[in-house]
Length: 364
Ligand code: GDP
Image 1 (tube, rainbow, N blue to C red):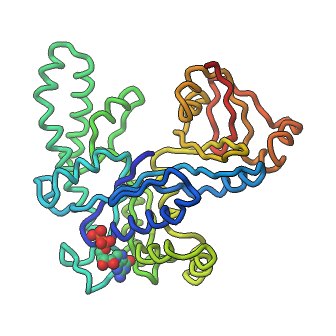
Image 2 (cartoon, helix red, strand yellow; image 1 turned 120 degrees about the vertical axis):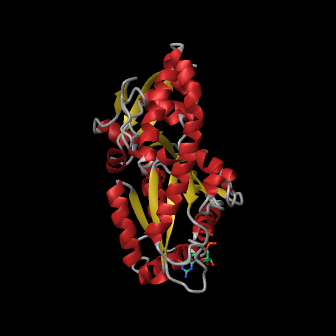
Image 3 (tube, rainbow, N blue to C red; image 1 turned 30 degrees about the vertical axis):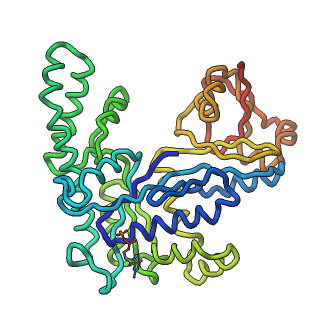
């Protein structure tokens, strides 16, 4: 599963949020196999109402959702890039993730110490971003001399890497994250190989007080503005409330959400945003044994989608039998969709659409 790092200063509510995420996962564990939960990393099911609807039509014995892995990254303080706090370990853990959720403290509570002395989410986010930028600067500067040497000998790959390193260094020296770079399609892979902390897709999470879960508050509005300026996604959540919701039975949960003015748990929003942040979409396979959601990247072709199930499916790909989700529901399954002419045979070039219900034909 793709990994999202939960990052923020101490005492902003990261662990509360992480525990709520994994408690929900634990509650689902009976229904969903392959649930792994460890102290600071947990697989979480991506909420997918369409999957339940599909499973009812067949009906399927088991429902298997797509998953995202969340990692609670503890120990970031001012000076982390210089080894303060858990310093380097902390940075290595983020490097290992595919995207970053920055948690900002937007609740006032005098009983809970703020490491920087006052509640100021924008300043907090800047402190964190600065540490990550410093870490990127340091790792890139170390590489320049070597790359220059190798580029001079005519090594094309080193020349490309050097050019990208310089693009990143220029941004970072201006105090801007590497995320701001415009990278061409040809450079995309080499750019990712730089493994920069500040080039990972980012999401802001405002952790608000219990009363502001539905509406947000003045502090989360500041974060929203900043997110907009940065072209980043933003989610308002009350970690405290979410950890309470996670412990409730489904019936009680609905009632509690209503009293809070929430249509769904904030965690669902967070998980969905993370899913989009990672550039992911879903296709389905359905049968009497299981109805399952598969995670692919937007733009993936049918053979690539097949490869997510098994590499043999991709290698021996012949064709994909495909029904759009809406058609599958409307015509109550495969037979009905066939009659209505909505059952398609798609070849190697087919770009899979979100919600496609698929069956692959392949040579072994
Ligand atoms: P971390 O250091 O970022 O992982 O922060 P924690 O999740 O351990 O939270 C620090 C403290 O803040 C704990 O005592 C939490 O109970 C409390 N806390 C977290 N979220 C909220 C919130 O939304 N409202 C209030 N009042 N307290 C919260």
